[in-house]
Length: 247
View 1 (cartoon, rainbow, N blue to C red):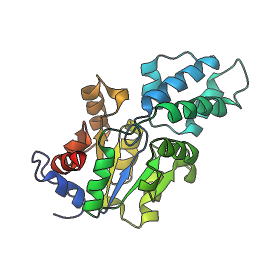
View 2 (view 1 turned 120 degrees about the vertical axis):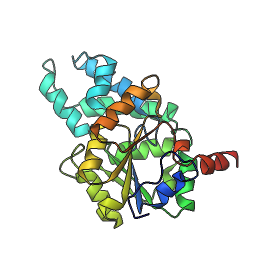
View 3 (view 1 turned 45 degrees about the vertical axis):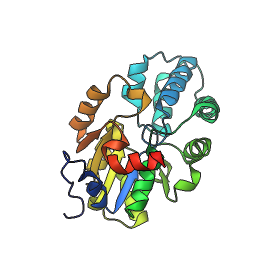
């Protein structure tokens, strides 16, 4: 099997080889490592309302899942006519971080899955549309800071997702060719960015924010170019994840 060539997706015994076929696994963060999108989207909707922007939850998810803070700020500046928007980011993040510290938990079995990658000697990193501050607050809240040596943010590139810039930046910094990277994403913007970067993309639908719409969202991610849709990390490495969970 060559680098970047997926193993037989129907065989559980072959699925860990899918991981071993790549030289780098790039994780999105929110909804992929941190089960944070329910908190993020609800606080974003609440802050929108304070700024005179009324939007149903499903529309907030459709428009802003996977979007950078800079892109959201631009939207608010263009659509809020009632008040200055200069404090929007502060207002949203103050409430968001407060709830992260109180409520945030990791995606089920993600820690075990990181152990699987370590056992296969496959490097991994984070490449998130979130700010470094947001990622740091979330990792600390989940006691996962020490698990990630390489963290990359859209703050480091000119164009955020769906442009490929962030994923290409992460691959270059780690020293891996794009075609040898596997990206795990839950947002359509992230999937499009991964495919634009010529990377294999796994669409992840196991976050709490997608509960009840997993099939529909998975099909949407597939339409955006996702090569494989998974509902959980056990789907990628079932035996190894189960074994580590029991330890």
